Image (cartoon, rainbow over all chains, first blue to last red; front, side):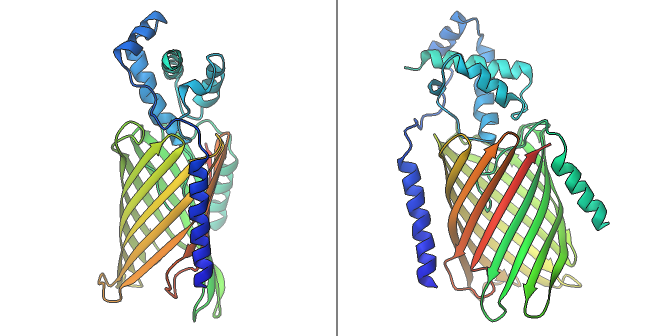
Length: 112
Length: 249
């Protein structure tokens, strides 16, 4: 019986180590609202308040279901479709949906 | 009454969906983020337990829970019914256990803050049972990895006159890795300290550990955890498997 329990324990640990070693995604949180990001936003006609609201919603609503993808993970043309699909599940109103998308696109334009 | 309750559950389970409370990556741990304001979700829990020892038995526990986001940081849940099926040498059958209300308030965010924290309170009442439970829920999201920790204190009064008292302190640790946008897998560990009559004379310690997997699609998710007992407590499950199926309403 002890052997069986140890086997389960070992299998669970190995499973976790395997899973955590196969990831290639960055562990960095989404880019913060810096002066540089605010300037990039202004060039794309997105004001600072919308950027702040978009980021706050992105890091709070989206993690209710899944971890956050890097903003560079999808193209600028893919993001609107993805946000549209997710908006209902995340209970985002249309202005909130626009703010999240605006933040992601501005942050994406700055990520290299 | 039972038919009415069953009808309500079926109607809720198959009604059209509009919004979603959130996905559980663990079944024996809670996560720090709370449901979005206005979202409503039905969760159905099934826990199968195999207990060995002198009174060898099996038990299946069921829970039907409605979860509602009052604000973005405060959620209320109602356990409509906890009930179970028990089978041992002496008897077998279904029985109602209790109903409960659960409140969770989120303090910090697991992505932006060093640690995401929430506090949890629950009041449970049923057939010869009253239970109070408090938790601190900690979580950290590191890219695709979710790390969670719960510290729980429980006080239970049972019996005809609620004369049997028991306390419990438990800690649970979990890790869940997002393999793809729809699938996560990881591990959960549960460490219990049981205090019959609120005393620690019997030194009852239980340790359970095992893997979990979670799948989400559209407005529903299903998460399964299998825990094996790593200690030798006779009247605790040697193996327990919990499944939570959640659907946005």
